[in-house]
Amino acid sequence: MFTFLSEGAVTTSTFSDPDAVAVPLTVVGSINQDYFTFVSDFPQPGETILAESASTGLGGKGCNQAVAAAKLGATTRFVGAVGADAVGDSAISAMRGYGVDVTGIARRADVGTGSAYIAVSNNGENTIIVHSGANGAISVGDVSAALEAVTTGILLIQGELPSAVNDAVAAHARGTGLPLIVNAAPIGAVSDEAISAASVLIVNESEAFDLTIRADIPAVTNHEDEALAIRDRFGTSVVVTLGAAGAAVADKTGAWTQPAPKPDRVRDTTGAGDGFVGVLAASICAGFNLRDSVLRAVTAASHAVTKRGIGDSYVTGPELAALLS
Image (cartoon, rainbow, N blue to C red; front, side):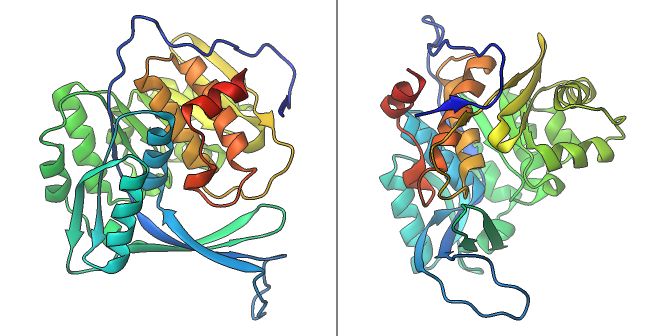
């Protein structure tokens, strides 16, 4: 059961344009093997503690977003790279199990599959250390070859691949006229040129702040004004995610804040932001407008934190419809 954290009108429409035709989503991004430990609290420097439990799972921002979109029902293709190792085999198999088209994944013999080491505390917070592995070795040639057949739908990128790769995806979007969603996370690997090619830019609070500094955007006093300033600078709709507070959004119609539903319990925040991005992208692919897509995304992300793990915490279409009802 959810309650909204702030007052104000909330969009309640949950239906796409009845004349809209769903289009496929192509996610170009990272894929990792995640290693989780669940702890009562994080250790101090030099301290050794015992974990309460441990597990492994699929991860990487791009992979997470593709899984979230596919679980919601979007036709989803993934472009990325893993090592020529057993971990890579397992990751590809797991993504296929979620319904993601994995034919765009390159196998790199020169480097292992990416990995992430995640500690989750009892209050749901996490610390993450990532080794990029094959994600950092993927080439423009790998991605360009995989994108040759992509002439329809929507493209989605993040900041966990080399900047040159993201620039190549942006160039493909420009050349084909395909809409591009950019999740500039982390911000450093996403160039101004890639952001300017976006139809929708998604950043969190710290990424939005870093972007305003990098782009020499004057300081503002609230997130809606910040989203508007970024919109005006880069010519793209902007979504600034605010964690438990929801999201501030700016498009050609103006700016608004979408509150987030408050979950009964927070068990694990890992991957919730990626779930937000995947659901937003899948919703746009299904024909929902940006306002309704953001509502669906904050609802799905708020539900995700009530469960441990990543892929299994993401909602299906019927589950999201039930939450919104």
